[in-house]
Length: 370
Ligand code: NAP
Ligand code: GDP
Image (cartoon, rainbow, N blue to C red; front, side):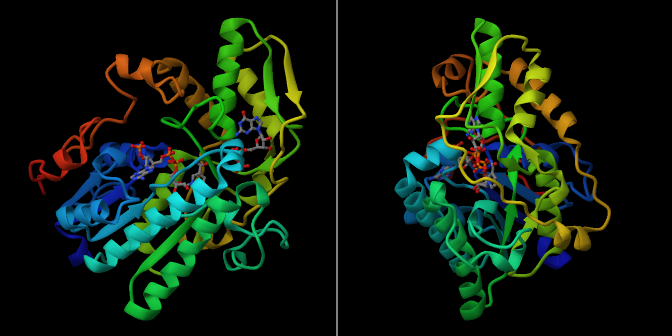
């Protein structure tokens, strides 16, 4: 995107109330104006959540694009879940995500959005393929069976991006993060990813004097990226990356750690001293999916990832301090405290009402543009 196009322009982030979107919102609110990962002068950022419009619905999606006319979109909105949620609902993950992605890309094309970065995941890769995973291997075989619905829907975005470029010359691309964690995650006990799920389970085990039970054998390996690091990489992509080829956003492939190492670190951070065991009747899911970050590292130059232990410490501390308003699956407790935890609104971006209805959001006051 040229600087003249970014001047006085609107950047929309879909799915901004989630883990990754909250991190982007926090960066935009806190990084200095015109800094590497901050807001540029003249940009207005719009952070959307599902209450601002259901992106499964073409009319609601189109109305959002008609209202904001974004020059660029960071498209994060998705039905997202951990291994066990995916295993139970492959069709729902397939349908919802196909609908969301198709509506967003079609509306972006119709409203002449100059750039869209959609978010995929390393589970789009084939289950059986030579490691490490690299960007050109996405379509070389079927994904792991545990989450084939979500994976196929996400993988299709890469096909859509290429078709939009081929037929209409659109600058649509995609990012492929490895497992993400951080503040504002979904800490549901059953439906979340492993780190937030285990933090919540360990917190309750300590509080109630019950055993801490980790699902599976603890042997599978994963690469974890802190949500704020991922947010920085998304902002870099927005500024610097204009290629349809997807980009893996990850720590190095030598930074894989086992689920047992993750659980051990959570036990330490939570300060849990009780009984700790593995429920080997539960699935391990995919054993490993090591991804290479060579391409992003060769393009971005100087970039330091937050060490895992430091990021985990911050996440556990945040969860403990915000238990009543975090996404724990016990939504009534958050509602009673005035709504779920959100980062502060960046200056110059009008607050999005936590419970704003779709029509109220569309009829809202015009936003201030610097
Ligand atoms: P998340 O915390 O579950 O947030 C999902 C976001 O999508 C929320 O803002 C949610 O809005 C919104 N959303 C869901 N359905 C919607 C709909 N029908 N219409 C409009 N908005 C909708 O997810 P996340 O972990 O931040 O994930 C963000 C992106 O990263 C996703 O595309 C995901 O596939 C990808 N990713 C995540 C991970 C991970 O480990 N978390 C790893 C790789 C890739 P409400 O809050 O209002 O419901
Ligand atoms: P995945 O990388 O897409 O498989 O996502 P997850 O974040 O759900 O991680 C799944 C891995 O963590 C599997 O090996 C699970 O057996 C293991 N695991 C252990 N305890 C839990 C838990 O409480 N929740 C989840 N989601 N996974 C767990």
